[in-house]
Structures are given as C-alpha cells and as structure tokens.
Image 1 (cartoon, rainbow, N blue to C red):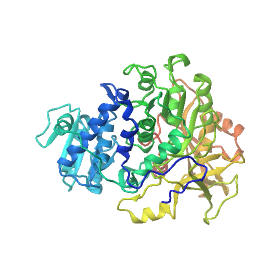
Image 2: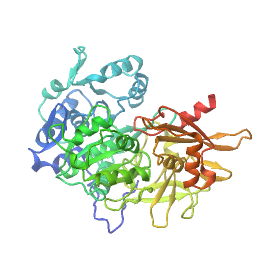
Image 3: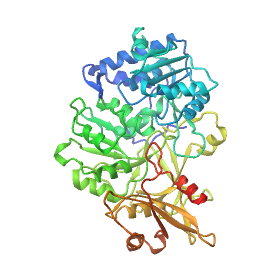
Image 4: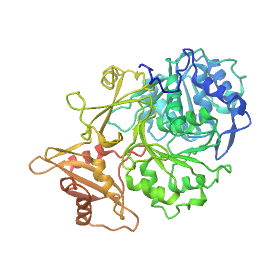
Length: 530
C-alpha cells in the first residue's frame, strides 16, 4: 500500500525501522508519574507501563518466541491488556487480539489459523480457552493468566509471575514500519472470521490522521471507550490515540450497559471523569432511553465519537440538546484500522458520515466499476496509508478486498453536494424495490424518530410475485406503544412513499454482533425458514 499523502498534510511517515510499541513509549518518556490507564482495580502510570511492557517483551523472548510468531490475546479490558499487546509488539511478536464474547469453537479455529505459540488470557476467560485448546490440534507453548480466579494448572502461569521473572528488555525488536505487527479478526459477516494483518506503521497513521488531526485529542483528556480494545475502533480509542498524545484512559471489563457507562462518566472509577467518550449508535440510543441518564452538569464530556454503523440524525441531535456535546459520527473498518470518513468537532452534519479524513481518498463505484454521479449510491472504496496488508491464509478474499491500493469496503454510500457522504447500508443489504434502491438504514433511521421506537432493522422479503418488498423488525421502548398502521404512516409522512415498510414485526430484541451491529442476515435467515 502506498503511503503517499497530500503535500499540504503536515504528517511525516514513520522511519523505515519502526516499532510502534517503542514509538508510544518514547512519546511519553517525560510523563512517568502520569496515569496512563485506570480500571476498577487500580491505575497504571506511564512509567510503570513502560517497565511492564518491556518485562512482558523479555518474558516472551525467554519462552523462545521469535520475531513474527503469534501470541493470542484473549483478555478483558484492564490495565494488563496494553501491557500484553504492547509487550508482544516490543518483542517483535505479533499479538492476535480476539473477541472475548466468542465460543470455544471460535477460539479453537483462531488458535489453529494463527498458530499462536503463546496465549495471554484473563482468568474469567480461561475456561473457554482451555476448552478451545482441547478441541484444537494446535499446541500452545505457554498460557499466561491475568487475574486468575481459580488455582492454575502447572502448565499455566500467573501474569504477574510471568513478567516479574525477567528484567525489562533492553531494546525493542528491530522491526520495520511495513512488518506485520498485529492481527484483528473481522466480525459481522457469515462464515469464518478473517485474520486481518496490520503493520507497525498502520496505527501510527490512524493516530496522526484521525485521533490527533480530526478529533483533536490532547494530553489533558481522559478517554473512555465502550468499544473494547480487541476491536479496531476500540484499539484506537482506548490505546493508540490517547497514548499518542499522553492522555489518560479509563478501561472497563464489563459490558457497556447504560448504567455501567454512566458510572464511569460520573467519575466513580479512580475518581476520573472522562472528557472524551467513544460509543456506537445502539449504545447512544439505549443511554438516551434510560431513566438514569445523567444531567449535563454530572459529566465532564467535551466530545463524543460514534462508529460501528451510521448514527441516526435524531440520536445525534437529541444527545447534543441534552449534553451540549457533539457526537462525531464516522465510518471505519477492521481493514482500514480506524475511521476514514468523519464529521468534525464543531461541524457535525447529522444524518451524514461527514467528509473524507485528510490523507484518505474516497471513490464511489457503480456495478460496472466506474464512478457514479453525486447523489447516486455507489460501492465505497478507500485509498489510505493504514490499509491492512492481507487476510492471513485467504488469497482469494485478499485479492477481492485489496485492489491496487484501494480497499473495497462492502458499503454503499452517496456523495452529497456539500462533499459529505451519506450511508446507504451494506452492499449486500441494499434493497431494490420497484427498480429503485432503498437504503435499509434510511428507513430504520426514520422509524427510530417515532417516540415509541427504540430500535429497528429493515430487510427485503419477496412478495407473492417474487418481488422485493421491505419488512421492518421493531423494538419498542419500555412502556412504548405503536401500531403497524401508525408506524407505516409515520414513515410515509417523512420519506418517499415507496420506501415505507410493507410489513412490520414487533420483537423484543434484534440480533447483533459483539460490536453492536445489527445482523440483518440473521433476520433474512429467519424469514427464509418461516
């Protein structure tokens, strides 16, 4: 992938020899006493972080792990997570950060696929990993357990004992900016997840081009992300961005429910009140619907970010009215590592995803591969310096996604007259009704404006003649009431008549990925079985 950037962009490329963990530690040499990370159990200063990262690197080397060998990281968000991840990077190993909500079968596949030589795991997740290792034909050389909750097997070692047995590694591995640094597994699609390989330079680019240049994060910020560190979105929010500017991070191991989020906003963890919050549309909707929603003066928020799926304008506007704080909506992907189209603090065009992030080029292409006119939906392609190197062991999918410097996102977008982009749904979720494209998201975003509706998902279903019609699955708010006819009329009043859902089914919840994305394919499967 080319790293050529516009001449007027004041960001220089990292040197050819570059270790991202060493880069972050060097940026914070003068902040030894400052809190870098905080969780429910305590805090970790920048000085202690560096020592523990270098001890982790030394311990991995002592186990015989070599450059580019993989290390599975199956850990809940805590102060041990950045030590594990950055320690592996510092040693020249390749951490494979995996979703903590998966099954033993999933982990068995990931162990075999990555051929991880060691596993760093939270005590609460050790049973799942143990089951996975029984199912897997791949043998893990060492299992290191963070915060064990039961006596360990002789083949397992406590995290503190592991890093305490070795002095800090004197110098980082002599990695290059284009060397493999870490893997993230894709989520939200059918079939096996894809091992997405990122270089040491990629998180540098996202931190500089987005975290610093667009969001304007600063040393005085306290960052808190509902998205976990094993996600591309969460990794930037909760580690690479704040460390790049010397900020402090509040980490949360539990699920990001509204109540759990509010406790952090109010400073109930180590007395730290977040100034920047990173969430997703589903989470913002749930918080706004919660009777425990804090008042404006109960938090220290100055900025919020949203990604994962497009933010409905109504949610952004209501949040801004209540808190006086923008939700800066953007789109990123595992393949591009973080956000490449975004609104701007102080200039949020709610209902759009904003403008291309400087340093990234955007193209919308039609079915023939050519450009589409402004105002018409097209397939989104991105060119930028943070694109992944490949999908490990999947040449066909790599060739299909990474095309001559451009990354195919699988999203449909429309470019507006003001240069902003509006989300039109996933390419395989777009519906053609009576020969006209209908965006499921547009209909969903309209439905959630109804005062009784909490969430909605729209899919296409065939009618008696085999023509595609829209069907909406609707979750009502607690105590909310609405009828089929009422919601249809509500949509007709706000959108072109052909876009209203022909069928509505009221459900108690919607199927979602661990990132909070609605899994419309499961709704389609349900309809196919009906």
